[in-house]
Image (cartoon, rainbow, N blue to C red; front, side, top):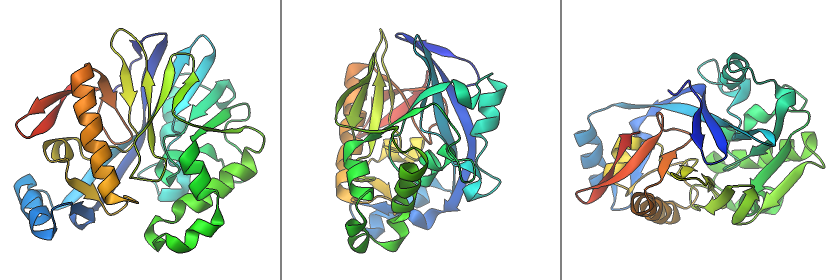
Length: 272
C-alpha cells in the first residue's frame, strides 16, 4: 500500500487503505466457459480471493477530493478503515470538498455514511450518469439479479443523505484536470477518473479486481459483473489504452500504483 502522497499533474494523490475483501474462488467466471475458468484458476493456484479495498485522496488547489469513499462499517471489521487512514493523513471529513464515485457498489460508496448521516458534511458528490440513472430507478430492480441489487439501496441512501449535493456526470471533465472515463460492464455506468499530467494517472475503479490473474487473462471476470461481456470488453480496451498511452493506473482493488505492459497475449501490471 502507498502511504505517501505522489504528484500527478496539479494533484497530490494518496491511496487510502480501507481493508481486505475475501471470497472463495468460485466467484470467478470466464468468457470462454467453465472449463477455461477452471484451467485458469488451477494455474493461478489459489483457493480463495484476498484483495485490497482502496479509495483515494487528491489534494489540489480547490482542497481535498476523494475518489470513492470505502466501505464504512457495513461489511464487517475487515473493511471500513478508510476514515482511520484519512485521519492518519490529517484529513478531516469537513475538509473534503468533492467525492468522485466510480460506481455505486457498497465497497466504494457506503463509506459516504456515518450511521444515519452524511460523513462528509460539505462535499459535493459526483456519480457517473449511467450508474445513477440505473440504480436510481427502482423499476430496474426487477430485471436485476438479487446478488447485484445492492446499488439500489446505496443510491437511495446517497439521495437521502446528500440531497442537493449530488451531480450525475457524463464522460468528460468533472474537475480541473480530471476526466470521467466510462468503463461499463461491472455496473451500467462503472467509470474511472483520469488525472492529467506529464504521466497521467487513471483510477479505474473495478476494471480489474485481481491485478495478476485478470491482466494475464482479461477474459476472467467476477459474478458481481452486471454485464460480463461488456465488462470484458471494457477491461481489454482499458488495458490496451493504458499500455499504449503510458498511463499509470490504480483502482479499488489494486496494490499501489502500476504501469501496464503488454505480456504475451495479455498484460502485466508492473509496480511504479
